[in-house]
Length: 126
Image 1 (cartoon, one colour):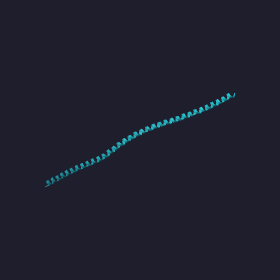
Image 2 (cartoon, one colour):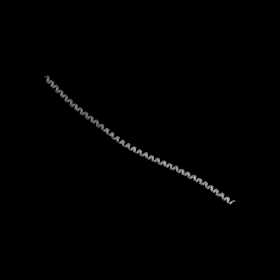
Image 3 (cartoon, helix red, strand yellow):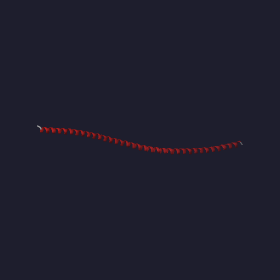
Image 4 (cartoon, helix red, strand yellow):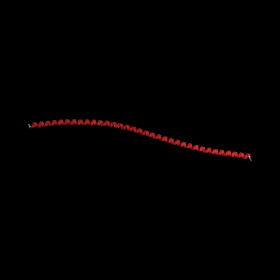
């Protein structure tokens, strides 16, 4: 009787161990599936963030190139404006020089006219 009870007890323990092993395997499988689902969900978000970052990097490079081109064009425009300003100053200097020459020529003309008239008067009234 005692040996049959021991055998029965061992059989129940073996059965419990099998059930526990089955439950352990089911729990491991469920946790693996959960982990896999969480990782896949996370990977989708990470992949989207990566794609967005690549787009942002590309747009930042385009913006940098555009800004560099704009800076070059601005520098060229500033050089052109500076050259134009210098040309205007030179033109003003030439205009001023021409006025000075014109004034000098008028003084010379007036002096020659006065000298001519004086000389004629002297020749007519000796």
